[in-house]
Length: 486
Image 1 (cartoon, rainbow, N blue to C red):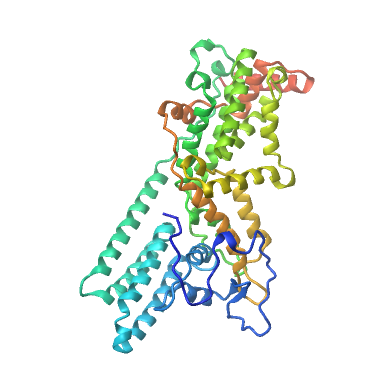
Image 2: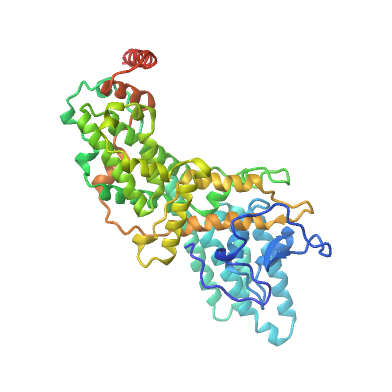
């Protein structure tokens, strides 16, 4: 759905493709030449970097001799919500379309004959808009504007009705997408409630009756593949406009929140919750095991799973696993860690070293992205970034660089970079998972009990007793609190 199709050529200056534009920086201090009017678009090395909102909207709408570059369509539609509601933008696009249609109708016979070609270009724009940003059409105002534009364009080809059929199919596809999205949001994920039952945590029940991850899957590669299945399923429900809410929900220089009426999407929450649940599941699986030998085995197993996730390109699961093993209740198990072969874990932690803004991770991510671009199989195309870091990058790009330049023009160079990063994510999420799905393993990963932080500490102290006065006091307090609740 999000794949940018083969570009249509235009006679006006071309907007750049993502792979060659602007590099990795975007300055908020770009000034137009002294001779430029404030409303004129400004170019740098042939790339559009600023302009008024009106000029940018005009550049979005096709004419008889012009169709906007698809990277421009994606970037402008994505960023426009910071400055204008989608239904308001649709209304402005509709007004421009009406003026162009009227000019053709009042022109010569040759110009009238171009109406069908003009209509085809407008439909193509609407088709890209509805497919790439379907959530823009969730409210009645946007759907009303879309129908009005469609009705005007249909008049350009009333004889054979081809345009009407295409518009009907486009509208049907849009409604199906919105319906599927609505159903996903209505099916609330049953967040696993942390276990607090004293009998479970204090291990009064025989361990032989309890399942653990190794009884479900003992192959690190298989588990990593199933984690990748879950990751790709979750990111498939995240749209570009969801990610842009990080920017569009914040105050712009116009001192208003353009999208403040839009509720935060459930898809982002669900994906963030998945990361936390996986981290806690890893910690739970380790802490609840009584025997040190088995506990050591599970730690080493998760290390191998994280390494397989890294090799696949599933950095989000890898980071979640490492985070789980670095939680205090797990990290304090010194007797267990003394038996673990930590060389592989040290390598993983090196890749996820937070120093220099996660430089090592970013290098690995770039390598996976390059591999994905030249890959012949879906197996090599997989790139699942650490979602929290991805979100932070978008957030800081927005905070560091201004939306508008001192002369009032939109700092479009900033939005090129934000759009490039979001486009990369959208491209990666479209990869079809090549691994066979194992429902039994996935069911365990998604529904197995997880402990609360408090319960993890209790289980950890049960496995390896407190070693100092601070730990002894904590252990006593936690145990008393838990028993009093029973």
